[in-house]
Image 1 (cartoon, protein in one colour):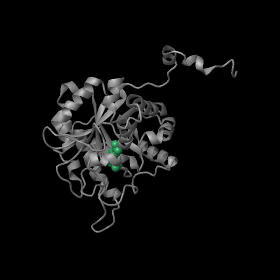
Image 2: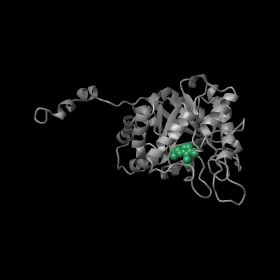
Image 3: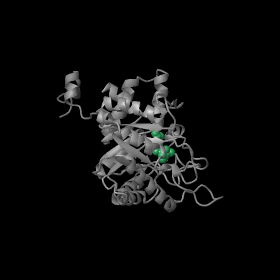
Image 4: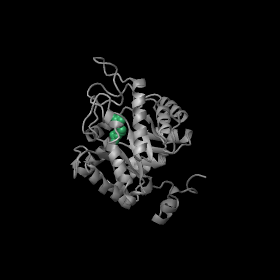
Amino acid sequence: MPFPVTRMRRLRRTEAMRSLVRETYLQPSQLIYPLFICPGEGVRKPIGSMPGVFNLSIDEALKEATECAVLGIGGLLLFGLPESKDEQGSGAWADDGIVQQALRALKADARLKSLVLIADACLCEYTSHGHCGVLYGEGHDCTVDNDASLPLLAKTAASLAHAGADIVAPSDMMDGRVAAMRAAMDAAGEEDVPILSYAAKFASAFYGPFREAADSAPQMGDRRGYQMSGLNLREAMREIELDVEEGADMLLAKPAGPYLDVIRATRERFDLPLGAYQVSGEYSMLHAAFERGWLDRDRAMLESLLAIRRAGADFIVTYFAKDAATLL
Ligand code: PBG
C-alpha cells in the first residue's frame, strides 16, 4: 500500500523508535586491534601516515593490550618488525622471533585473558626483498616461488601456535598454504589452534600506510602475482572455497570498505565465521579528513564500521578499535 497509507517516516520519529527498529549493531568484542611489535624497550614510534598507530616494543605492547582488555575489545592481531631480515624470512619462524616473544609475554599476563591473540602468518615483514614468499633463484625477476614458500609458511604457523597464538592468520596468498599450515600445526601438536584465512585478499593501493608501519614494502615489483585482482568477485569465491576445503576455520575479507560486496557475497555463500579487515589506507584516508575538519570523526568512524557489519562481517580488524570501543 503506497503513500499516503504507508509513511516510512513513522518509524523514524524518535530516538526510541529508531532504536527499536535498528538492524545492525557493533560491540567492542567484535573489534580486533592490530599491533606492530618491534625490538627494544620503551619504544613507541609513531607511524607518519597512520595517526595514533605506533611500532611498539613488547613492554609498550603490554600496556596497549591492557587498555584493549579494559575496553572489552575482542582481540589483537600481531605483526612483527624483526631485528634483521634475510632472503628466506627466517625471523618469521624463529623460536625467539619478535612476535613469538610478544605472544609469550601477552599470554603470561592474566589480565589479558579476555583477548584473543591472532598472529599474522606471512613472510613479507621478514624477507629482505619484502615479498610474502621466497623468490626464484638468484638474478631472476621478482616472481615468488609458491611451492618453495609453503614449508616456510607452515613452519611459521606452527611456531606462532607453539608460542601461544590463539588463532593463526595466513595473509600471504600462496596456493595451498592453509593445508600446509594445518598439517604442520597438527604435527606440532597444535591441532586445537584455528586458522583464520585471509581468503580473499586483493592487491590494493589501500595497504600503502601499513607497509610503512610494518616495513614490508616489496623492494621490487608488486604483489599482483599472488594477491587477487580487485576486479574479480567470482575468482574470490573460488579462492575462499579452496581455503575452506583445505581446512580454514574462519575467513577474513580485505580490504573492507571498498569491497563490501565481497563481504556480502561471502556471507551469503559460506557459513564460516567471517571477519573483515578495515585496512591502513581506509584508516589514513578518514584521518586525513578528520584532521582537516572535513568529516565528523566519531560519526564517520562508526558509520564506516557499521557498514562493514551490515555487509555481513561478524568481526572487524581495525585501527579504530580503541576509539570505537571507547564510544560504544
Ligand atoms: C602482509 C599484510 C599486509 C596487510 C596485512 N598483512 C600488507 C600487504 O599485503 O602488502 C595490510 C594491512 C593494512 O593495510 O592495514 N601480507
